[in-house]
Image 1 (cartoon, one colour):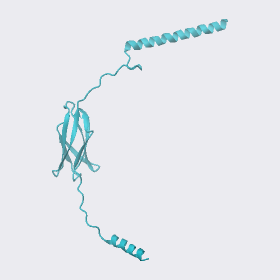
Image 2: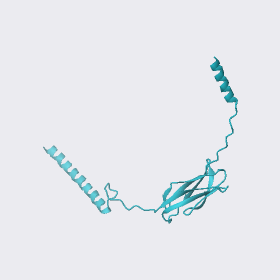
Image 3: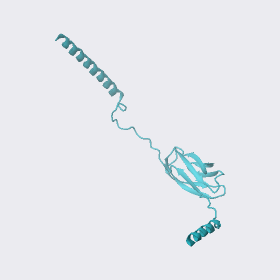
Image 4: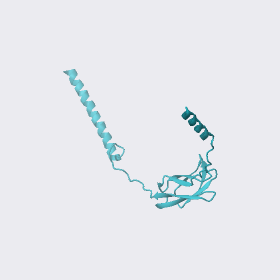
Length: 160
């Protein structure tokens, strides 16, 4: 019985004792680029965070210039386009917050390569026009021959 009373007293004392003050954690200052590797001419999404995400900040880098990131859903958001003629390389992206704090990340730009025509593997979609007309004509001739043979077979049956 004494154990239950002393346990209850200890729980009450802990509940009534104020907790020590904990310093508020500062928000992390960061910048992200998604995707981090893009071909020249594509768009990237920028997501950043400053201590105060209620004010716009600026993200800058050689390929995209200076882009304002604006508050949205608790972060600072923007979209930027890498110019089509941008040379391939790694570029430092820098966030500058209104209070002067900065953060950085890297954007990798790769050369934009247009794929060549794929191999002609059939299916009609890759056949040249000359081959396609030959196939259509051959198919019609085969159907006419089959119809002629069917007519002959029916006549023989009636005569016999």
